[in-house]
Image (cartoon, rainbow, N blue to C red; front, top):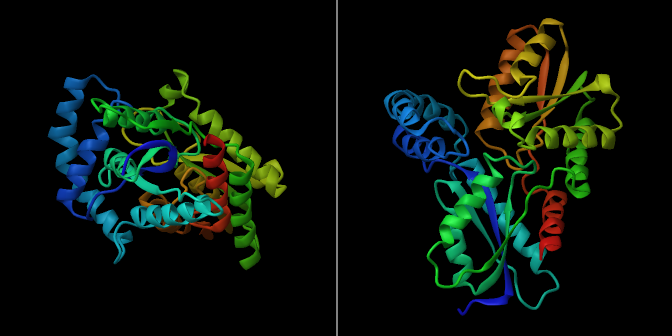
Length: 327
């Protein structure tokens, strides 16, 4: 099909996932992920030695064991949900239009790749593409890295589509309301815990010092969500999880806050991860399973994980609103 500027399409970007919960698949995935300069900006020769002589020799086995805990019959939960989100978004965006709007998944690492997603959209005639990285809060390690991959994908093309990148949507009203609705629904099923914890993926503290807006946007999202829920300051906390390596990352750390709450004998904590639009290893294993188990062992009560927004209708409508504004 001939590519035309009037034909619109959407590239739905997420971080990525290994192809299988095996050491070999994890070694391939981690080698690509951890070699990205936006993720790890250590001096390249030194980092190559650390990555290949230490990390890729030990971490794949540990990571594979964790992925095996969450892997489903359909495959990686992140990829399965990404395809469901894409299908729902295509339906929402095509409603009432003569020309359907295709939505294609492109992962920053692993498959399907960003490059393959762009090629698929061009094959469907899309000359005008909105790239929506499913990272509500902007960071050099996520959104900017996705932009790098988009530019690299079209390098050398004779003709490339117009690609508009969604920078962030950390304070979009429909996104905040979808988060609030998910919390209210959990509270309707059973009473609220003593505290609502909003856990975001961490980044090295020096990223913030160099001007990365990620931490500030996480704080805005947390405050807006607390405001939407009518929570006083003593009823919620914002934290950061998933730190890697020995250097200082954004604080407070989720695990340390949970340890403190457990030692204080807190009977019930609700936790959600507003920066993850789909459940994945960091939410299903790190928070819903491991953190909940550690919380109880440390003397706490119930740690209730509130699932990611996924393909909830209000979340899909929020994403559709964001995409339409970029059309």
